[in-house]
Amino acid sequence: MPDNSTLIRRRFDRAGIMLAGLCALHCVATVLVVSALGLGGHFLLSPEIHRVGLALALIIAAVAIGWGALKHRRAAPFVTAMMGLTFMGGALAMPHGSGEAVLTIIGVALVSIGHLLNLRPFVKSA
Image 1 (cartoon, rainbow, N blue to C red):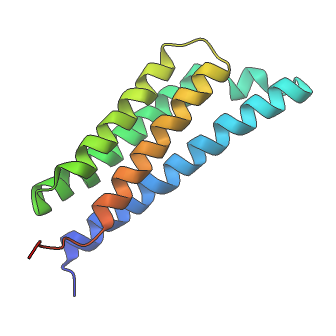
Image 2: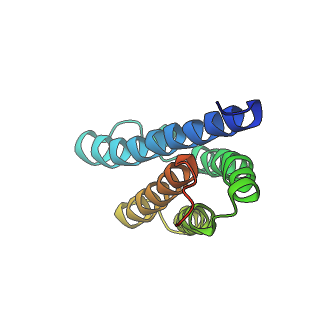
């Protein structure tokens, strides 16, 4: 049975995956809604949403992925999540549009994969 610290870390990983999913949904919905209907651009394209989302992703990844890396000493979750956060940060530097959405979706996918790798039990090679 996992100890309390492992359970807390797993909750952070799950929260990170959920946040990444919401971010991807936001990107797709923004492109579709603003492009197709011209609605919600002032709110959905707000830079504050993207900055807050990246800040939350950084905090959750730092706790969950960092904690996991210290515990199980595997580089893959950490490297994968950091690559994803780099894509997400790069997306902030781009003008709104499909390029920004693509970078963000690549980033959140990589961060989610990092969290999933972090959740996998450590298996020692024989």
